[in-house]
Image (cartoon, rainbow, N blue to C red; front, side):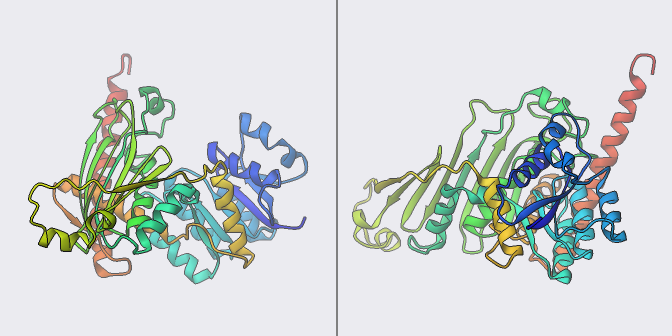
Length: 399
């Protein structure tokens, strides 16, 4: 072997994809060191590795036991298990001096992300997150446009992300989907980590959020399938995010208003409406001095067509491998996982408590209070969810 020996923990839909990238030599400097139990079609896909002697462990625990007993030598792990299990696997990997790449979200509650981050800091190992959407040129370009300062400060963000449509069967196909007890949430936790991550990456972390989560609105489920969020930033900018799995036809349209331009992103295309050419001065100055009471400002529009990116996941894995080998940086650092989890936790908390929530700054006393409040609420939801299902089972004919 030549590369960094990497184990994949959780070889389902996504884990098998990551394992096959490494198996097929698509990630420079990485080789498959071990996998956890793999079934059916996924097994078929990874047969070359299994036959060439890549060890298969029944569970993540068994894999770590082998590392700790010296039976298995690896350098890094990629974690693609259900959400709740991310923290435990990551912390154990860091304690064993391994690099960690975790799928999103870091966990179900922000405390899990914090523990992962603290373990990473203690170990000094590389910690990355699989936020594949950050590898897309369209999002990288939005990041540059907003962060460059070219158009001044952020004024407003409106994002309608209803392109997550799912039929009823999506939720019934798996026993852990769409339950508070096993999944830990609905659209906010399963689909929106990408939207929330991109929102905070491109526009910065909001200061306050108010969320409205509708549970079982379009589907017969106990978790939310329709969300409306209102954000406020420190500089006074405001924003909304609307997401749903029951709206059709779905759209994905992101509008960002800056002081000197409006940026609209839809269908992989970015349109920019600049103000300066038309107004001849900054918009705030024009607003104060103009005597034309009803002038419609059209903006001067240009269109950007960023390249499509077919291999976002490979780019993420490659950037992780590069950082482990001291040749670059992860596209998304592990610490980013905590930010979008703090955000989604705050949205839930706000919806349940029916009030606006201030986002705590990481590492403060407020963060601990926030963690307790959120987890207390989530526990209540989970207890209720388990009780309800026990009742349903008992009420079944012949039960």
